[in-house]
Image (cartoon, rainbow, N blue to C red; front, side, top):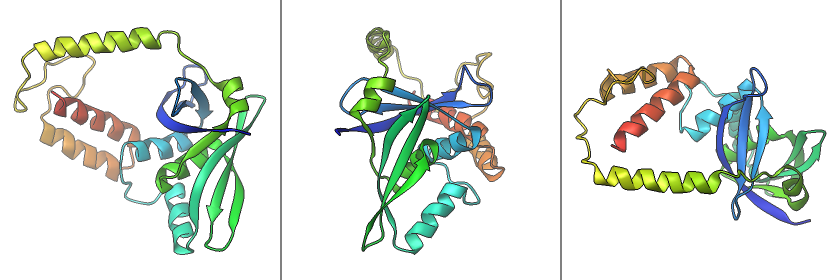
Length: 209
C-alpha cells in the first residue's frame, strides 16, 4: 500500500451542507485535492492553528497535545486509511518512547492534532484514486494570477501609511493597522476566531501592499 503525503490547503464554509465546513487537502507531489466536510468545532480548531492564533484558554486538541507531551508521547504521523460511504477514517501513529501505538481517530481531529504536533499527514493510493479531484480551471487560474501579479508590479506601490481605498465589501477599510490589531486581540480574547481570521487576513493583505 503506497502512501501519499498531504498538506492542508485551506478551509472554507461548505456550500453544500449548512453549518459545515470544507477542509481541502492537497497531495505534496501532485495537483489532486481531497475535500473533506468537517463540523464547526473541528473547523475552528484547524483554522486557528493555520492562522497562528493563540486562544486564551486551551481548546480540546491543545489539551490533548499538552497531556501527550507531559507523558512523553509523540505523534509521529497521521494516516487517512479508509473511505466508506463518503466518510474518511484516520489513524494516529504515536510513540511513547518504548512502543509505537496506533489509535483510531476522526479525520478532522487527526488533522487538527497533526497541525499542532507538526507531523506529516498521509493517505493511500486507493483513497486518492477514489476521492482525489483535479480542478479543471486550475491552470487558467494560475495564468490569471500571474497576469495580475505582473500588472501589480507595474503599478506604484502604496506607502504603508496610506489609507486603503474603501470598498463596500471591506468593513475594515476605514480603520488603520493599529485599530485592526487591537480588534484582532479582542476577538481572540473573546474566542471569536471567525472574526479573528478575517482581521488577520486584512492585516496580511495590507502588509503586502
